[in-house]
Length: 111
Ligand SMILES: [Zn+2]
Ligand SMILES: [Zn+2]
Image (tube, rainbow, N blue to C red; front, side, top):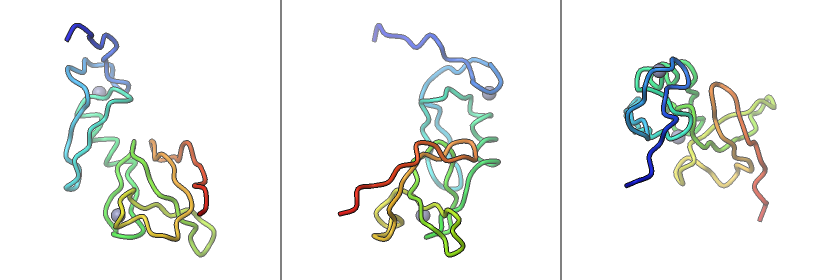
């Protein structure tokens, strides 16, 4: 391919990222990250520090992934995987789980 990604230095440490997506395995889940560009080492660190737990299956949800959002009993947000087994009928919101923060939080049109 003639197109080459020129801006491929790690967003955290600045070292060169040779190929995108950065792919790691984190707690049994494969993670393929195109954006931001991160080296394997930084992506592993961020997954360790910023992953959250799925309220349905109890497994880790790594950062930089789509999540379903449930309202907990105390009004706090709970997160679930965006999979059919974890995303239950009751969940009305979804968002993008970043570095320990929810981005692009939006309400799914109720049907
Ligand atoms: Zn790095
Ligand atoms: Zn889950």
